[in-house]
Image 1 (cartoon, protein in one colour):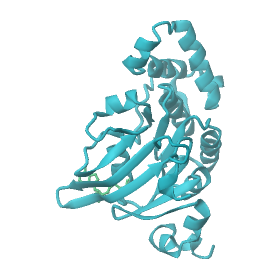
Image 2 (tube, rainbow, N blue to C red):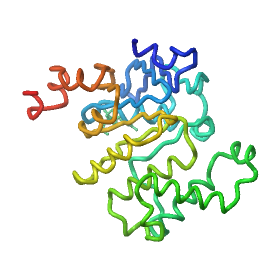
Image 3 (tube, helix red, strand yellow):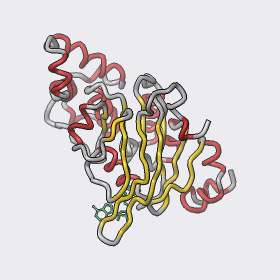
Image 4 (tube, rainbow, N blue to C red):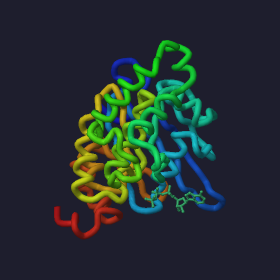
Length: 261
Ligand SMILES: Nc1ncnc2c1ncn2[C@@H]1O[C@H](COP(=O)(O)OP(=O)(O)OP(=O)(O)O)[C@@H](O)[C@H]1O
């Protein structure tokens, strides 16, 4: 099956389809004519060296930037001109590279706020969501990311790794159908990285995952398919083994430590 068939095999539109996506910042072409399809329930990692265009691609899909050219479809709907808030209503959840946690508040309160802020359209459809139901959901989400023992802890007292886990819980608070993670392993210790990897591997496949990640190991372990970007373009797309074995990728990104693999 080709990447373009992913998710379309059962006749459904894919979770995400990007066509000819291009973003210029003045004279800099940050993203150049990128095509990408992410099928339902797929885990796709986007990797690439500094300045490859990963974050710009992420921000285009999330709606934080508008493209110079190209089209973005979420679950079959053209969202290219929709603001990020309305993409969230359509099932897109995201984390941020810079933490947006309320560090003076508890873990439970942070997760609770992510639920209260859930899309209004969903609230209208479920007017019976009570505080009790939300509290239950806070516990479920904390449990899911391994923070059930820290619900009362002030977020500022959590380790960096725990804060990233919390961000994943909060992104899941809006019940996204497509979860986009922006370099979730940045600044984590090796043990925190393996904890995060376990968490991502354990996510239910009802949630499609697009992971933008500088850390090769996490990207190749979590992603069933890996997209390599270089100088704004999609250089290569394939299963982790193919990407790991590519000399071109080794040249541009993996460096000497991988060159002998
Ligand atoms: N807001 C902006 N204004 C001008 N140039 C930008 C802007 N954002 C990104 N760029 C440029 O676009 C190119 C791609 O940057 P981008 O941040 O998307 O790469 P990246 O792969 O995410 O890199 P990193 O791994 O360092 O975060 C770079 O040349 C960068 O300097």
